[in-house]
Each structure stands twice: as structure tokens, then as C-alpha cells.
Length: 94
Image (cartoon, rainbow, N blue to C red; front, side, top):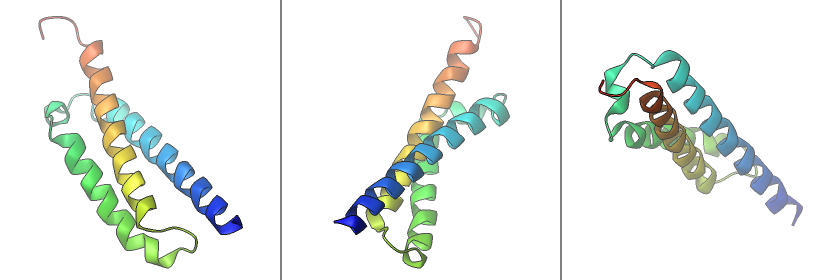
């Protein structure tokens, strides 16, 4: 029971960190990059983050493949959210 609670807390923390870091990175650093507006960009970022997480997961106790998948999904959603904010900040007709 205690191990399950630790794994749920770890997965939630990693997902929150992945979402917020990806969103802030896209808003701050990729504001002027046109490729971030491509609809496939969040998918590529999410799959890459999940693959990176899948490599790190065997080294950590209490986490599994679900944590890596949650991290990848949160990064993809963060990239999509950051790109949406960039598009909303642009003046109309651009």
C-alpha cells in the first residue's frame, strides 16, 4: 500500500513537472519558431519524452512504465498548450 502511494505521488509530480516545464519552454524559447505550430510537434515531443522516461524508469524504484507514459503525455500536452498560447498572443491576420 505504501509503495503504491509513493508511485502515484511520483507519477503525479513527474507529470506536473513535465507539463509545466514544456509549456514554459515553448512560450519562452520557441516563441519565434514556426515549427512549434505544426500539429505533429506535441506528438513528437511526447513520444520523445516517453522514450527518455522509459530508459530512466528501470533505474528508479517505485515507478514503472506508466510513469514514463504519463510523463510523455504531460510533455505533449504542455507543448500543445504553449503553442496555443503563442498563437493567441499573435495579432489577428498573422
